[in-house]
Image (cartoon, rainbow, N blue to C red; front, side, top):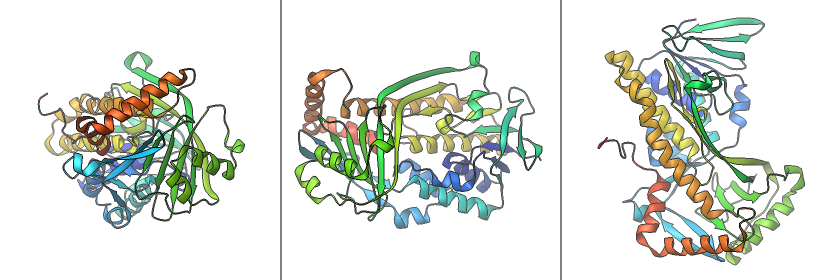
Length: 397
């Protein structure tokens, strides 16, 4: 098989890239080691920045997102038992976030992919990439007992943190930066109305909590827990009881509980690999970087990577110019490190860190108190939360 771009990974990054390239008339094939049902069943983030919304619109998959997504013009910070609203729209000139689950984004992109007629290979075993440091890159995989090969002009590595693409790069050619946090997020999904119409981020002496949602009838809640905890050690009732202890009295009183649809524990890490281009292999999304979920930057950063990558590939095939491809890694990394910094800072501000003692809680509460009483401080949170403009910091470069 021959194509212009072979995309490894059929998560939202790979599907979005495939859709943008298809709309530009660039042939592409997606190869995914998991089944479509498995990909669709992954429970992930649900807050979209304006930039991500714009890219999804450009890809032609925004209709259901706008019809069913929940625009949020603010969120609450809860500390010392009281809630304080961050006015996102008022502090950023009307910009806001859109609550729309990653599962639904993936579903929309899958539907568009099926309608496009472009090839997607699911359940591809032993995927391997070859020749990306030369002029003839290709991908091999096994399917139905056969070893198959796809030749292409470029390989896009959209296969996540544990994927084959970054792992195939020689260690001498890549630098990795990583911080692993000493706790995880226990998440519970339930068919219950959200406790509040906007998100609540909780700093509590008992640990962080987050009250989020997927719709007006489906809620997503999180608790900071030790990495030694297991899902089996948390019954639904234990989860709800602990969440109430971390909430303010009004929220605890109005919280509607119910059986969990899904429950899982996710570790937290900050991770960046540099560069993101290796000859004709270009990494995007979780294949190149991971952020802690505080601030919901993962999917949004991936959408930005994909936008930069699609523009660079379109420029290559339409204009025979490699300016965009040559600058792809540097351009992405400028934005990535800003989001990594915000996610690290927000995580450090809201969570209890083992061994730091009560003074750390006092420091956090003092900083939170400053932030909500300083317009400049509140604007810093708001600007980073809704997402910096796509060209932020690039025009002066």
